[in-house]
Length: 281
Image (cartoon, rainbow, N blue to C red; front, side):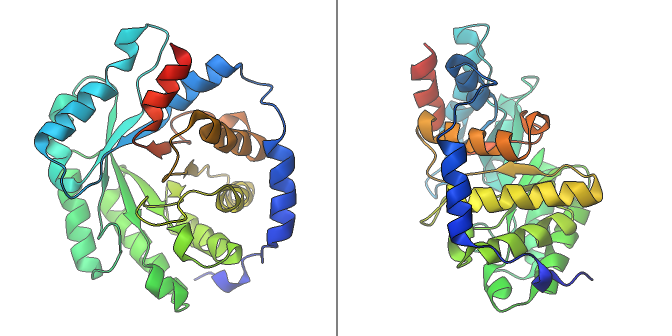
C-alpha cells in the first residue's frame, strides 16, 4: 500500500498566484463560440433532488437530446445524471442518442454507509443501466487519517463497476485544505478511479478554482508516472458560461488538448446548459 501521507504539501499562496496568471490569459485554441459549444458537449445534465420524479427525469432527458435539433452544429450534452431509482427511465428515454446515463450511488451525498450497502446500491444502478457511476469518498474516515480504508472502498467499488466509468467525488469543500485535496486525489486515482470530481453540489463551497488546480496537477503527476489518463469533473455551483470558461482554461493549460473531450472532461451542472445556449443562439 502506498503511503499517501507523503503526497506533496500544497502552498495556497503559490496556487493562487499561478491561478491568477491562467485565468487572466485568453483561450487561444478556441473562439468564444467554439468554447461555448465545447462546454455544452461536456455537461453532465443533472437533477439530484429528493422531489425528483419520473416526469422530471423524462423532461430532463428530452432537454438533453434537444440541443442538436435546434441547430445541427450544436452538440447535445455528454450525460444525464440521476439517482439510481431513476436510471431505468433515463435509459429508456435516451436510447440510441449517444448520451450516457450517470448515477450517483454509494451513499451519495454523505458517504456514511457501510461498504456492503454502497456496493449493493452501485450494483443496482449498473443493473438498471448506468453507464457511469459518481461515488463519494468517506470524508469522515479520510479526515481521521484512514487513507487505506478510503483507498480500499474505492478499489472495491471500481471492482463492481468494471468497465463502467467511475467518477470519485472528493467533496473538496469538506476536506479542510488544499493538501488534503491533493492526498484525496492521489488516493482516488491509485485506487482505480477513472475521473476525480470536486463536489456533490450539496455543500458550500462546491467547485472552486483552487481545488480544481490542485486536482489537475495531481492528474498530471499521476499521468507522468503511470501513463494513465484520469478524467476531471468540476461540479456544483457552475451555472454561468464565464465560470465554466475558467475551468476550461485551467484544464487546457495544465493537462493540454488531450483532455479537451467528453471522455476525460465533464462539467456537472443543472442550469449551465440553458445559459450557454443563450450565448450560442
